[in-house]
Image (cartoon, rainbow, N blue to C red; front, side, top):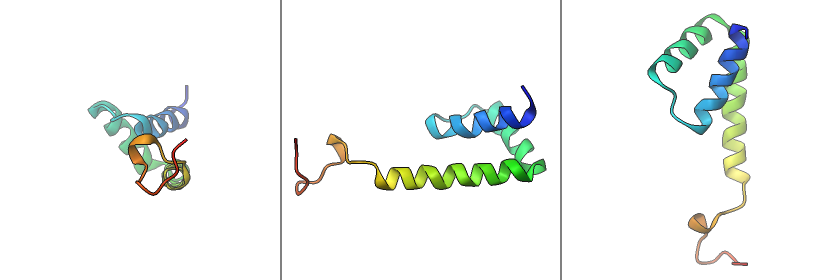
Length: 69
């Protein structure tokens, strides 16, 4: 696996779970050197925020006003 593929995998993983110290260090080092991966990480972050904003509410996030099924 090449370094950009490994970095992309870590970018995705960090949205699901905390990265280990080694993973964070490897990703930071790669992002410091690779502008394409920095842009990819920025886009992942944007997509993550948009998705969280527009995903349907779950039981634990429903307000009293929201209809329940």
